[in-house]
Amino acid sequence: MKRIALVLTALVAAMTASAQIQFGEKGGYMTIGLESNNILYVNDAKLGTTYPSKFGSNDYLKLDYVNGRFSVGVQGEAYLPALQGYNDLRNNGFDKPKVMLASKYIQWQDTNYSVLVGDVYDQFGNGLIFRSFEDRQLGINSSIEGARVTAMFGNYVAVKALFGRPRLYSSSNNYSAGWIGSQYARSTVGGADISLSLSDMFGSEELMLSIEGSYINRRERTDRKIKDLYIDLVDPSGEVSSTMYILQDIYGLKTPHLNMYSARMNLDYKGFSLRGEYAGKSNDVIVGSVYSDVHLMQGLPDVTKAGSAALIELGYNVGNFSISAQMRRLEMMGTQLSVYGNIGVMGNTLNYLPALTRQQTYMLASLNPYQMNAEGELALQADVYYTLRSKQSRQRYWNFHANFSTAYTLKEYQTASKKRELLWREIDVDVERQWNKQWKSTLMFARQEWNTSHGQGAYIPSTTYASNIFVGDVMYKINKKFSLRMEAQYLLSNDYEGDWVAGLVEFNIAPHWSVFFSDMYNLEATEANGFNKKNYYNGGLSFTHSRTRVQVSYGRNRAGFVCSGGVCRYQPAYTGVNLMLTTSF
Image (cartoon, rainbow, N blue to C red; front, side, top):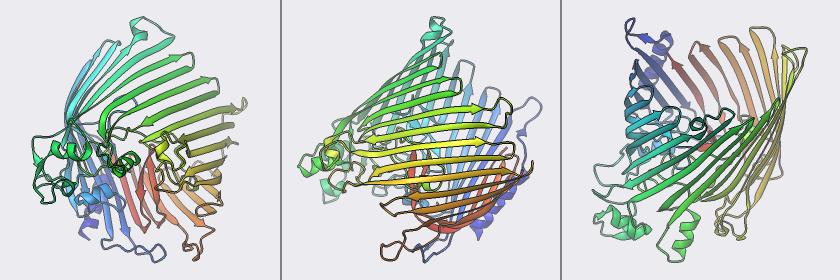
């Protein structure tokens, strides 16, 4: 009850505030952002779920003070405890109530330069070698605690450099005293990025051309002695060994340094755009991969390998027509913040490698999202858009969209057949029609195919499943205040769990209220095939006022992946009451 009272107190405090806090007429001002996600879990015999701790709460409070060129900020987080499904957090001690200072910074920003000391969030290029970011939906916060300097020289050259130690939610508990449950990795990260605008240098107005380059170094700390996660493989007596001794003896890593680099080019000309990036990395520990498993089974201790990535993006638009395509090759690019800590977990990632697929929002289209294979993947995505507008009325138009995405394995050892295999393929077609001021409809068809082995070689049987998904979405504006939206969805498949049906009804009362109910049901579920017949229902209401939104819902949620920006987190099935609050002022 104390935890619930704390959340409600924060909610009331946030609701009563409505503007920035100003300090004098010429003084600075403070902004405040609060986000709280709370679930009261309910035991559900149909799902087979029981919870020793029936309450979970992830809460974030961010304070920023700005005065001219000077700014300072902090972010506090409270987990009371962390929600189910945030395994990186819960395995690191956040399965019990915990309050912490998550990030802080002091910054001076002028027209042509800036200096920031504290926790740095940044990205070099497309993120192939470096991205430090926060995504609360995924439970990721990989900020770099240190410093960053940026400088601009006219419109011609932009430079930035940073250095620090990365935050690591997912540190292991098998380390020596003094580092158990640490928020930070046993490594340091430093790098620089430079961008040159050639079009500005040569005074070109039609052609926009720039070249860019980045460098990142990750160094494992070797100044302390630790009990390693794999100590039993090295010394069963439990004697403490140095970091590099363990790394070299087990992994074959010869240096504490990992070096990564990238080169990029950006071109825009009369509706045509071209983006290209090539990235490379030196030998890195590749643990928990097909490559390392094959080597270890063959008695080869060296499980290190260099990596590379290539990304090309093309685009063209003219009038109401546009087309874009992305092509990417990945090989051994899953880079960790540190080789210590839980290797392979989502929160321990130095770079950003999202799946090249459409980010679906409809329930049945997002049942089985694809996750990229950083060990080896060839991927392609293309989108085509066309808009047809009525000359007589702005309220009448057609929007046509088609999407195609696919991914294949890269290396022969990734498959039992020793041949390149399909990992994913999706074809989407959707048509949006605004009929008049009141009616709007959307029809979508999607066909998805995915390989159950996901490039794991002979360890997982290779089978390709296919789903055909049909969606109808209708919006009716009754008047300026009331509107009704309805969805009907059907998934047709002879594989996996068979056919599904889903629906949603949403009633909105502008500008504050929204009431919704949805349901999802597996038509093939029987006791014989191991699936209990159950409805995945969810209903609730939300209230929005200014920059504050509160939502309360109750429902049963299917086990599956929650995705944000092409990166996914596994969420176990649960039934419960959900209270969400977001506000800023």
